[in-house]
Structures are given as structure tokens and as C-alpha cells.
Image 1 (cartoon, rainbow, N blue to C red):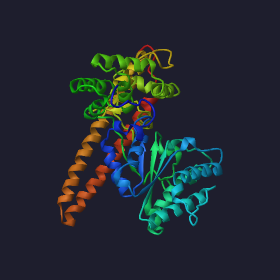
Image 2: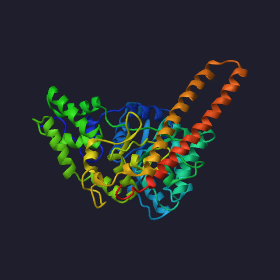
Image 3: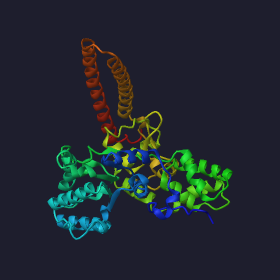
Image 4: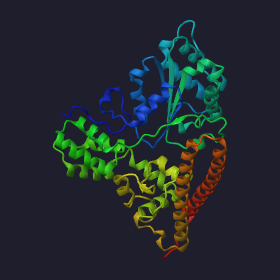
Amino acid sequence: MKPFQYKAGCALTEENAELYVQRAADAEVLSHLEAMNYVLLIEPRQQGKTGMINHLVDEPAFDNTWWGYVDVTTLDRTSESAWYRSLGSRLLSQWSALTRPDFQPDIPSDVNGWRDFLSRFAARARDESRRIVIGFDEIGAITFPGATLFFSVLREIYNARKLERQFRNLTFILAGAFDPRDLIDDDRISPFNIAQRVRLADFTSTQVRELVSKGGWSATQSGELADRIHYWTGGQPYLCQWICHHLGRDAHSTEVDACAARLQAEEENHLPPIIKRLNSDKRMSDYVGRILAGEKIKFHPALNHLHQRLQILGVVKADDEGFCIIRNRVYEAVLSSDVLDNGVSISESPTPAGNARIRHLAQQQRENDRKYAELSRRIAALDTDIGRTTEEFKRQPLMEQRIQLETERTGVANQLADIERQLAGVDPIPGT
């Protein structure tokens, strides 16, 4: 029997906290919450967002903190009043020990009641020298009537901290796999652009070794298994847990390969939703096909909406040179097989290699990538010169030159985004 049973599925909780592997993001989130900053966790499914929140609850640094956690997919979204009643009831049940005869906040039924609810609890936390952290999980599922006002209140109470000082004792974790602009596109009232975004990277090879070391295998065996698990998964947390869970006590690297093949054939919780999402969007599946075919495409999720969607889905990331690649070998094997509803295997779909227009666009893309990198280098050099210059009359021409280069770089970035949009919409010419 292994000392710890790996968990392939739901988030890690207190019962299996020993399996939790800390990443750089843990310290970053901890620092932001101690400063009472809002925290934004936008990551693919099963990347460890909920497990991180569960782990933070038990951090000694938060001994004086009242925690609230809400998976918004479990709330009543049939109406605005139903939403707020179910939300308020959920938090009150978690904070039942905080209520008393002279402190009985009403369950909210609208956005004004919600703000008052938060204000009263924040004031009590301030009076008792405590803090409140509320984690909203799967926040991309907030679609009830009046959702815009819900988000605007989160932003408004942050802005109100100067005059309503109780709100300094309240902060939020906003977590999910979503595009913030799908929820609210007005930057003036969005809580997402004032939250501190923290990225949950895949496990490093060292972190995979830490995870595997908890399985009861010998040190030599553990190192061999960890290296092969990282080879297949690239450190994706769920995939690492799944393979560890299915390995036998006498396992070696060849069994990891067998588990990776079994994962592709039998796993039902992680891979099928990815395939289903790609099957529902031909542009996305075609784009994945181009990447699998070896086309060199610069990864620009901040500029290219298609890249952003593939990143949130968890399928694509940047390689060391900044080009799009499939995130790990498990995904690559699955996506290269005959699983997408395109009539042919995605790996066999026509590539754009013979399309003159695509070749021309790709050439333009490479040239603009070089321009962007060169402009960035020149701007960085100017920033150094500006920082070293104390006389204002010498700084001014440098600042003007920097503004000119920044404008030029923005133009190149816009051209890159336009090229990516064209490439995403171009169909290869049949027979080329």
C-alpha cells in the first residue's frame, strides 16, 4: 500500500493535503492576499486552482482570516434575487460562528443588499482586526440576469476603500477558465483589470519528482518514474496525478508509457471536454491542425483572441522561442489521432504549405516578429539611458524618441494581430 493515495479527479482537500505540491504561484498569491489585493486565477480546467485555494485556507499566515468559498456553478441562476439569496445563504452557512444576536446580516436579494452584506461583515472583521477572503470559483459561469452589476460591485467596493475603510479588510480570489471580456467588457466597472493575475504553471521536473516521491517507491525508482511522467505530461497537474494513481508498486518507465496510452484511451474526465470543445469550433480545431503540422506561428494570446481561447482551454503554449506548440505529449498524441469530427484525422488534414497566400502571410509574420523584437530591444536600451540621465534637457529628446518607438511597436503589434486573424480564417487551397 502506498503511503499516500494519489487523487485523479477532484481538487485536493485537507484529507489529501500531503499530495499538494507548491509552485511559485503559491508565494505570489500569498503575498497579494496579505496586501489585500484582489487575485485573478485564469487557468485551464484541472490546473490546481481550487486545490490552491484549499491549501491557502490552512496557511498559518491566514490564522486571523475569515474565509469564504463559493463554486458559482452551484448557485441558483434563475433570477437576480435567487442568485443573491443562494450566494448569501452559502456564505452565512460558512460564517455561522460569526453571527450573534446583535449581528444578524440580512440575506441579500439584490445588488444593493449584496453590497450592504459585504460592508457589514467587512466592518466586523475590521473591528476584530481580522481579514476576509472570498474565493469565487468557476466564475466564468456567472450568467444570471444582472451579472454585470454583481461584477461592478466588486470593482466599486475596491474603489471605495479610501472612504469606506472597512473594505480594506475584504478581498477576493476570482478563479476559473474564462475570458474576462466575455463577462464584462467595460473596463471602468470591471474587477478583473484591478485584480493581480497569477499564473499557475505546470509542474517543473523537480516538482514532479516531489509528487512522485510521495508514492512509496524507492528513490531510484521514483526518479525514473518522475522523469518519464514529466516527459509525457509536461507537468500538467491532473495528468501527473492520474498516471501516478494508476502505476503499480513495481512500476518502471515502461509502465509510465503504458499508463500514458491507457490515459488516452480510457480517461473520461479531462480529455473528452477538450476534444468536445475543439469539435464545437472548426476554427480552433483547424488552428490546432496547423500547429501539429509544424507551422511556425508566434504565440500572442494578448493580441490574438484565438490564441487566448486555446490557452484557456489548455491546449497551446509557447515554446522557448515564443512559437505555438501543443502543451504536452499526451495532448499531442490525442489530438494527432482520429478523434476530432473533421472527417479525417487532424494530423492528416490539409496543411497550408502549398498555399501561396499563407506563405506570404507567414513571411510577413516573421518579418514583423523581427521588427517587434528589435523595437523592444531599442526601447529597453532607451529606458536604461533615460534612467541614467539626470539633466531634464537631456532626458526630453530620449523620452520623445521612446514615444516614437513605442508608437511604431504598437503598429507592428496591430499588424501581427491582423495577420493572425487572416491566417486563422484562411482555408488551404484543395490539392495544394
